Image 1 (cartoon, rainbow, N blue to C red):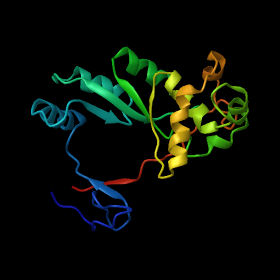
Image 2 (image 1 turned 45 degrees about the horizontal axis):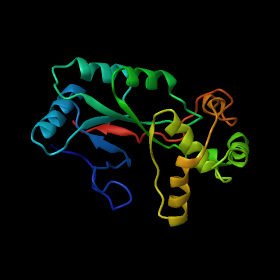
Image 3 (image 1 turned 30 degrees about the vertical axis):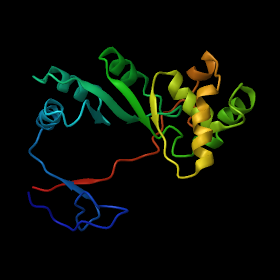
Image 4 (image 1 turned 90 degrees about the vertical axis):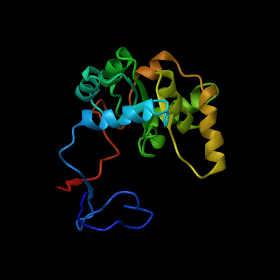
Length: 196
């Protein structure tokens, strides 16, 4: 495989080729099913126990499940938070036995100041005034796993406290007051260019 551009330093491009425009490159000519077959081989060889996808929509999950693969799609990692509920995709994934793992559960940090969640953090038992706990519990209560990252030990402890945060059913049904009913993404996929 040939690519244009150089592999840049640790913050960007360390593992993936980056071209002169600063975009990640990837090889064209391969289908998602081709890639899934390679992932299936890793499961069959015992190198991994389960295989999943990231940012897959309903059509891709369906395509992979309808292929000749004997390895099911176990997880779909997507951006999901109260400002981007993804209800339809979650319902579809649940009906197909695909676990949803959220990234961006705090809305890129923007939802921690949302007045609605600040208010819930003050009112609800076990939340201890932490909007991060409210946001994480919101996802957990919907059966969604959440990926959060922090190098700060006190934030890690705060995040673990989400388990004891007690939200009401009505709290889980509401979204972000910031987005006012319009789903909003806080993370944008990097631009990709085809390598060949």
